[in-house]
Image 1 (tube, helix red, strand yellow):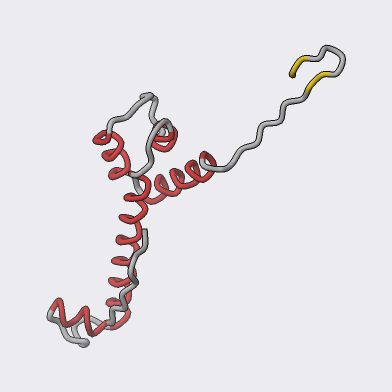
Image 2: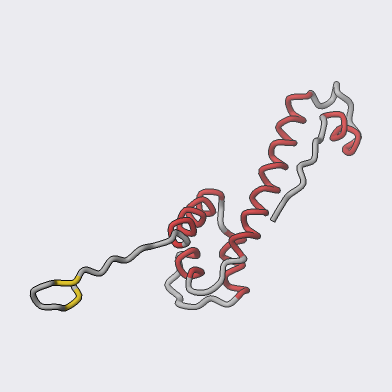
Length: 113
């Protein structure tokens, strides 16, 4: 998923909300723009996490229910705050790592251990 970056200036924001620079200073406008960027990014993260399928859903959602339907899983993701989303990303990162399992053969008994 790619997201187009758009440059928004303080004057653009003032024009949309019909205020002047005397009414709303640049630092307040900058904070508004930053909050909007974070909100857009969080929604993008939610969209990606909602795309998780299979048994990973239980681990990501942190629920005891073995299988979640789309509505239940989506509701959990939508209700998640920023720290919960960060934990979900960490869990997904671990679950999607390539894992290697080594099996050793015991030479004396000729069985796998």
